[in-house]
Amino acid sequence: KERKSTPLTDKVSSLVLNFTKFTVGVATVLSATCIGLRRIPDPNSSSSFVLQNLMLGLELCIAVIPEGLPIVCALALNSGMKAMKEICNTRARTMSAVECLSSVDVFCTDKTGTLTTGKMTVVGVYVPGSEFRLLADGQAVKDDICAGQRSVVYDGPELDLIMSSA
Image (cartoon, rainbow, N blue to C red; front, side):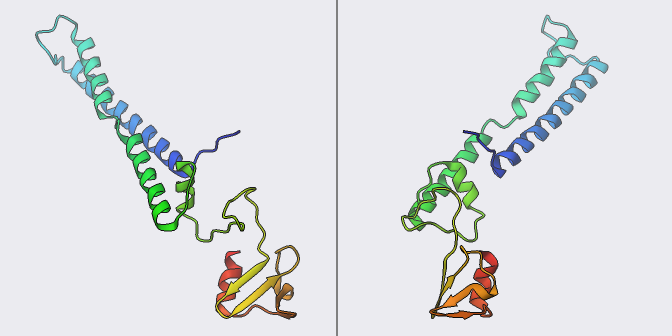
């Protein structure tokens, strides 16, 4: 099964890559400056000043890279899963599903509440005071909407909103 990256993982990967490039650049400039000035970080050490300054740059890289970033992301997604479970009585199997669902405006499920194939067809629309049936396999055009036995043209604001989101 092919695993697709989510928008959050793409953004975090980009952030870490840019942060790493910046840190390596700063460490390189710092080490080169210290070597150029012949500054020795630890005068009591027996190793050469070039090696000491390169180690200083490496230590800077290790110290600056955020170790807690994956943990913070996982905790944020976990709290989103808990909120979905408590508020909406919804269960997500993976944390990446929470991230993808956070930007959903319209959510359709089958009668059992599960998403099986990822493809669904709208066959009916219920708005306050009205019920509409869509013909032609849910691919509704203006002449394919029925209210009871008669065909209707969707011109109400509620139905316009639903048709624009479907």
